[in-house]
Length: 369
Image 1: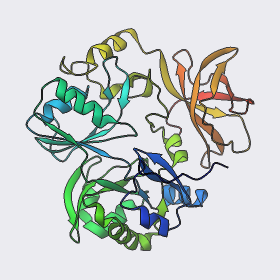
Image 2: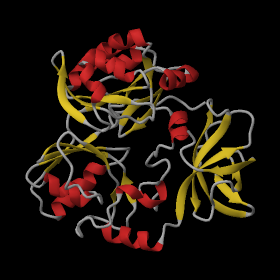
Image 3: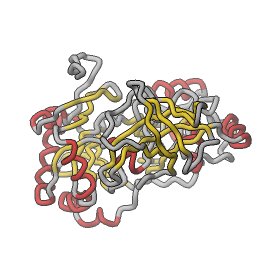
C-alpha cells in the first residue's frame, strides 16, 4: 500500500476540502497542484450511483485559465486550432491546444464569458504559463490569470433533477456545454451542463472560494431525495465511455488525430494559430498511432497498471496500454491503448502487465459502451 500524501504548501486545498473530509473521503491524488478526492471507501457504490443515480464530485482541481482584455479572443484563436469565429457567449467548446510540432499540450473546455473574456478549463498542466508566453511573444493586450473559480460536479442520470431542484426547471433545456452566470442564495456561480462522464450532469463553478462548504451542503441537501452521495471522477466509467485523460492517455509525442480529436481541428484555421502548420502536415501524411480499446482475457479483475504496459501483436510491439479497469457492465477487464495504425478492431494482442505476466486480449473500437 502506498503511503498517504505528505502535506505541503505546494499542494492547495480546494474550497470543498473540509466538506469532503467531513463526508469520509478515503483517498486523494494531486492534480493541478491541488488535492483531488479519488474515493470515499465504496468503489462499487460510487460507480453504481454514477451509472444509475447521482453523485457529487469535488473537481476544483479543474482550474481555469482566464484570458481577459481587448485581445482575449485573438489569443484564444492563436492557442486553439479550431475556428472560433462562430462561438457565442454562453458556449463551451472542447478544443485541442498544441505546441508548434502539433503535440497535444492540453484538451480544455473553452468557455466564452464575453467578447473580451474567456476561460480555459484545463486538464493537469501548467497551461497558464504557455498562454502567458504566447501572449507576450505576440505582443497582445490581454491578461492571463487564474480566476477564483472551482467546479463542483453533479453527475449521473438523476443529476438534472438535483440541479433543477436548486435552479429551477429551466436547466432541463440547457444544451450540453452551455453555461450561464448565476447565483444560489447569494453564492456566485457559473453553471454549465458538462462533466467528465457520459452519464450526464452539470458543473457548478464556485466564484467565491470562501463558500465551498456552504455550496457543498446545499447540493447535498437538494440531492438527498435522489440518493446523492460524494464520489469522484470515475476511472471505470471513463474507460467504458472512451473519455480521454490528457497526460494519462497521451505522451509527449501525441497529436490530436491519434486520440480521436481530429474533428476538433480545423485545418483552415488562421495561419498564425500555434501548431496549425504541423497539424496540416500530420493530416496529409496520416497519423502513426490511434487510440483503441482492448478487451482482456482475464477472468478476475486486474489491478490498475501504472507503467503503460506494452501491447504486442505476435512478437512485435504494437503500442502501450494507457489505462485499465474491470467493467461491471461488460463483466470483463478493459483498457485504452495507443497503438500503431496497423492494429485494428478484432486483432488479437498480448499485454505485458506491470508484474511481467502476459494477458491475451482483443482490440476493440471505442467507446466500449
